[in-house]
Length: 296
Image (cartoon, rainbow, N blue to C red; front, side, top):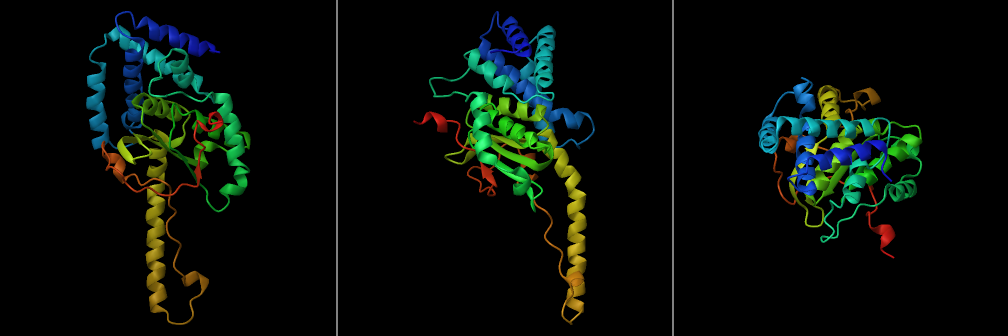
């Protein structure tokens, strides 16, 4: 059942569709909204503008061309409703709209698992998060068929229910073959402030056509970079001292541990088109396929 924000979103979306298909307008809005959220930290001066920024700015200008100023204002209102819906509230806002408005590719077998089922599945998957986070700091989670992001959102909700902020300790690696799903997931995970890389690709063939890190993940890596440099300097100095001093090394003279790593190496995210079939790091958790409960 729709909540008030979803009802208003649906009405505004249909108001833009008098001379266009609802599905076409929704796809265009998803592209524009996803780029808008990606670019926010750049426009705010929190991240230096790079090649990825310039590439997406060009794409943004192309996507908005067919729409009037008044229609683009409605687009911004749709984004405002989406962001407001995710303020302190875990839900598959866009996925439910896409399902109810018949915007999914039913012929291709696309469907989104109801959020209540996602909640039940994540409760079975996660267990005691405080125990799992001991000695790690960050838990990496793989979602190979992310859809609109419902399983990821339910995962964040489950962690939050245990008194842990999911924005600080979870990193998600998400993939979907559907372009609309790729954008929906990116928008919703960004709106919730979650650290994630969302990929448009095929998890089975390991082919990836585009991937984007959410603003929260990019800002985290920007914060982490100087700390990593400090760790490397300490490691180098201790290694030199260990070579100069021949007696049995004391704990203080032992080499420092390797700099703390996370799931994602941001170097490839400057490229709009990543290499195909690229080997990726092993994640701590892989979420159950969204179809699991229906394969009976």
